[in-house]
Image 1: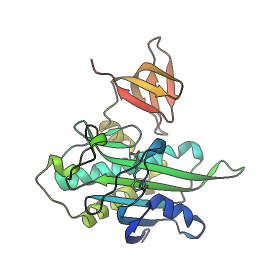
Image 2: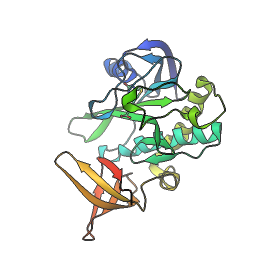
Image 3: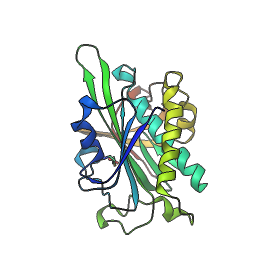
Length: 243
Ligand code: BTN
């Protein structure tokens, strides 16, 4: 089998733990934790990871990909979460490029990818894909309540977290094994909540308006600004502009 899955009760952050052991880990190693005491999100944010409610895990991967295709791994992982939600709950989630999974307006899953690049080769040495999914409903901290939610806020079904994790891993592997053929891409576009939308692109030193027109074969977001110029984004924060 591809995966080696280890489950622990508590850890600071599954991403941190894999990073600390990066030299000794095989491709396909997965660490899942019942809770994280210092879960991390993107841009230095915390990721609230209480025991019993969510699924917190990281995959250690050594993809045979140039760095400029690393984003595809992120896209495959969000597609895997989307597929597992749809299979288990019969709900159609959306992906907000690159890797947020939303139900309605609420983010139910966040993904933090961290990598190390082989010097000189411009090749990925490894990539750690950290996935946090809010599954069972609970009272979220005030500061995230307006943007984040749990899958089961939207469904009467209760799904076992182990079985859900298994479905995410299986779905991911299917996309990951065929990543050179971009098998995730048609679905990724279909489930995108940005395509065709007027957006604001928030960059460190400026914010500008654009339209999200496509996701290319490296999972970059293709945007068009008001003067018709097309731009390809490989990272960035996007807000949908409400009309
Ligand atoms: C985000 O939404 O900004 C990304 C959140 C990523 C959370 C997951 S939970 C498992 C892994 N360990 C971490 O510390 N973070 C990721």
